[in-house]
Length: 245
Ligand SMILES: Cc1cc2nc3c(=O)[nH]c(=O)nc-3n(C[C@H](O)[C@H](O)[C@H](O)COP(=O)(O)O)c2cc1C
Image: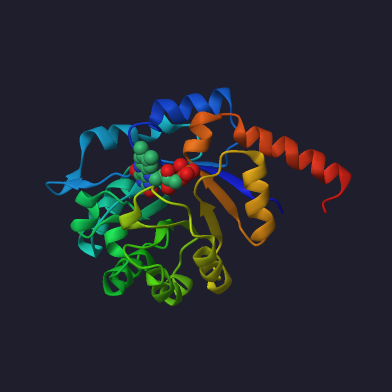
C-alpha cells in the first residue's frame, strides 16, 4: 500500500482556518496535525483551546498535538482534550525551540527515558484515546531515539512520526537518513517519515527506500505546494495502472 500524506503542524501557519480551507479547497491529505497546545497556569491557553473547538474542526480529519515535560503536565492536557471530545492525541517530542527543550519539553524529552516511560504509562491509562508521538532522533545525539525504541514499541502508540534531525540542529543541515534507517529497522510500530519533502519525486524516493512506512508527514512542502498530496495520489494512480515496479 502506498504511503499516506499527513499535514505537519506548523505553529503560526496551520491554524484551524488554514486547515479548514486546505481540506475544503484542496485535500489529498489523510490527517492534519495541529500546532502544539500547552499548559499555562495549569490549563490550556484560550487561543489554543479555540483552535481545537470540535465545532470549528468539524469535517476535517484533525489530530490535536500537545507538548508536555512530564506525566503531570500531560494528564491535564489529555483531560481537557477528552472533555472536548477528542479521541486522538499526538505528543510532541521533537520541538527544537530552546525555550521548550531547556524546560524539558519537545526534543528536551528525548534524553530522558524515565520521563518518556511515565508519559507512555499515562497513555496506557487512557485506552479510549489513540496516541501518537512526533519526535526527532535525539536532542544532542542520534542514538537517543534508539534507547527509547523498546518502550515505544511496547506502548499503545498508533503511530510514530520521525523527523531525522537533532533538536539542537533546529532545521539546519540535512536530514540523517542513515540514522532514520537504523530506527526504521528496529521499529515495530506504524512509522511516518517527516522532513524536507517538497515534490512527488521526494516522496517516491523515501517510499522506495523505506517500503514499510505507513505515511509521510509534510509541512513546508505542502505550504509551498498545496496540491502536493493530490499530485501524489495522481502519481500513484498512474503508477498502479501501469503496474508498480
Ligand atoms: C514555523 C514552524 C512551526 C512548527 N510548529 C510545530 C509544532 O507546533 N509542532 C510540531 O510537532 N512541529 C512543528 N514544526 C515542525 C514541523 O511540523 C516539521 O516537523 C518540520 O517543518 C519538518 O518538516 P517539513 O520539512 O516537511 O516542513 C514547526 C516547524 C516550523 C518551520
